[in-house]
Length: 320
View 1 (cartoon, rainbow, N blue to C red):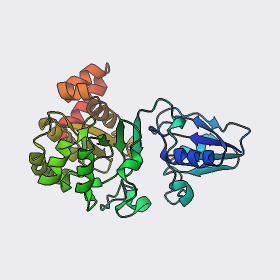
View 2: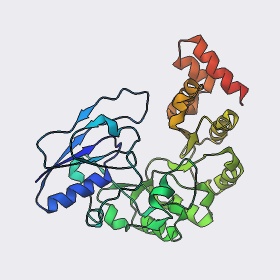
View 3: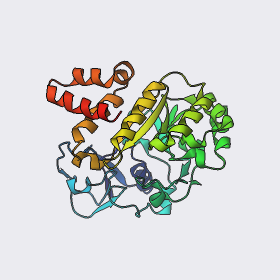
View 4: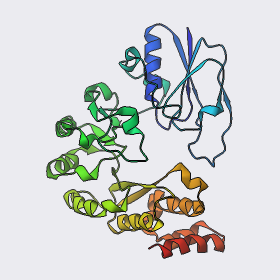
């Protein structure tokens, strides 16, 4: 059997597709990958992608909502968060190892030690899709390369997370929890374990609401081992959030020499402040500029239009 796997929009090697590939190859089937690289951003140009012909079975994984309509073909089996939150892999496929040969040149392993979360954030689909936090894999089953990025949504909420961290420390595994760590769950013991990890890049947390400010301020004291600018915070923004609180979060992080990574809700693109959201995202998400420049300095470097500079700077200053 000839099997086609379509990766519509993954930014990392697609785990479900790699499991499907492994399962079919075990049966002796021939597997091919069609990578489409559709963007998440709604204002980016998207083109139609037609499924390659002459395959007996075709699967397509879609991560971002709205991208399914750009995949054209007959009898395609669709799955992924961009399609629905219900469809899952059959147990016999879910239990398969990952076929990294689909993505030549990959030097990093990816996987979940746990799935689910204890939180009920209004903007997050994880509780609906994965339920309450639970263990799904052993570390050794995930690590296939010298580096590994764990995709757990809230590893610190897992009751036995400290034994997981100890194992990572003892095995000196070069790793990162790249979906973020819940800073509200930091204590003296797990902070020490995090400091002992053979860590990749920045330690990532989240600052989704100004109401967390005092908690974050206190927890940063427990992370005093971290080097300057080695802590990064995802900053979720939505048009319904007060601009004052959005800007205060950015200023707070810069003052504490922490990186801010803006994560815009898709509703931002339809907002009357869309251009401002674009500007603060460009400012924060370019680390070398965020560390060295004020927002005004950044705007004057970024734009030729005096009106655009004036507009974004006005919103910033009025909401400081």
